[in-house]
Length: 340
Ligand SMILES: *[C@@H]1O[C@H](CO)[C@@H](O)[C@H](O)[C@H]1NC(C)=O
Ligand SMILES: *[C@@H]1O[C@H](CO)[C@@H](O)[C@H](O)[C@H]1NC(C)=O
Ligand SMILES: *[C@@H]1O[C@H](CO)[C@@H](O)[C@H](O)[C@H]1NC(C)=O
Image (cartoon, rainbow, N blue to C red; front, side):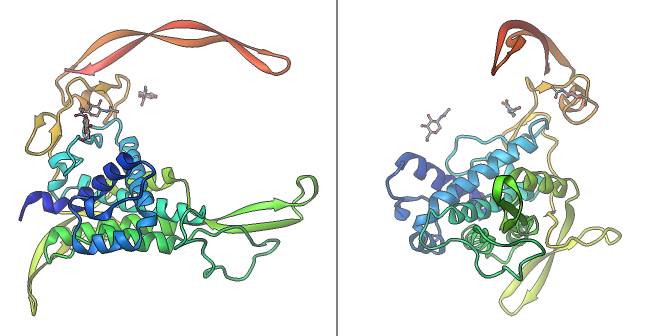
């Protein structure tokens, strides 16, 4: 198998991203997006209205990944290669691959759901099905976000390539689904008060998605506690099929909400084009932290350099009655530590 084929998810995502940004307000031409499999092409044509949200979803997923991993050896760097935006890092079935798949699928479900609720497409809208009876002191109102539609779009598109009977496909499907499930699990009621001068005589509520940061924090926890699996081969009527089984029997088996992987990560200390590691030389480290962002761990024991940097900052701010603030500009000197 062509290795790039394994990272189908990111292939299409970037393809659409480029397509969308280069075309601006022009319609998306599904046929000109490179790397789509027939199922995705059909899907793109049927749902062309929401393709910009799909691209937006991948983008917010990547941004959240970069936020969650900002101080770590692997910091979710993307490279400028239209066929594999993360470089070869995702070729292996590691925790990092698991996280990227989960957060990108979650991002797509999230962005599509949000844009449907905002009324930006004719094929989707608010969720009118799962309302249930009104609660004490409130009634349904506003637009409940239809996370099932958003998840369906994410599933149809992101999982379209993951239909091989091999272990990597099984892993990607599992982690993609875990990402989408995290959104469904964090749906909550949002309410608004109506009444004279802010009184809450009438309260209307609707289902809302959480902030995407909540999803990022949650999936980062799942990354930290991801389950290591081993690959098993079975003979079935359609031929050999690979499935995943927990490596350690004494740990709780992963649920559909957990992330799974079956290959160990490189340590990302030194640059290595084969594993997609950039190394940590010249990365900024935190000299007072004992965590992974601290100079000891981030620099992999190579030590660090220190330089001073002058930064302009607002200072001596005064509040004037009423109502503005005036400030002076000061130069502050900072120590900046970077890995050797
Ligand atoms: C992430 O890592 C890359 C490669 O080491 C580095 O160039 C980049 O500045 C880092 N980004 C952040 C936000 O630290
Ligand atoms: C990245 O790719 C885009 C589009 O292919 C290109 O316009 C841009 O110059 C590239 N940037 C770098 C730093 O290579
Ligand atoms: C560095 O680490 C310390 C201790 O963990 C933390 O309090 C501080 O905010 C960190 N500084 C930066 C710039 O992240």
